[in-house]
Image 1 (cartoon, rainbow, N blue to C red):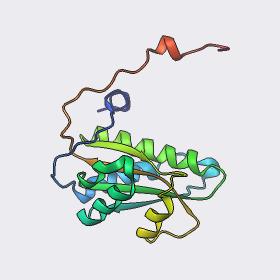
Image 2 (image 1 turned 60 degrees about the vertical axis):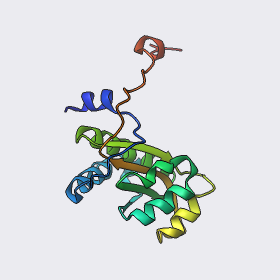
Image 3 (image 1 turned 180 degrees about the horizontal axis):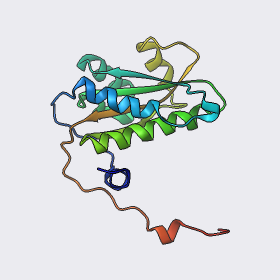
Length: 164
């Protein structure tokens, strides 16, 4: 699958089969995140991969909008050092991982973390240093979600040349 096909196919998946995701596949996806651009090439990101079912259950309970994390065989928790562009940099890494997951036949869902009331609790649970900022949690696994991707607004509706 080329990058444009992955972009067009990517959707948020909230239902997963129980099949484990091979470690090499997870590492390949995280490596795609590591390759993202960052302001001044600071690369402020750190990735915590959680495969333990009990830990994923705890994350799902803490993160109320991500209850499905308990069902996904993998959760990638993305943190960044508090740099000037930490949120942009972390978001670029996350999008790379979402697209890589799609290209590899996996489903994923981005669950917000930045500035959420549960951010410190998740960091503490994962032994992440105090100065790191939670950017997001990504559920990851083989999709058990037959629903089609929701349509996007047409290009003609969102593209403006020279001015709005």
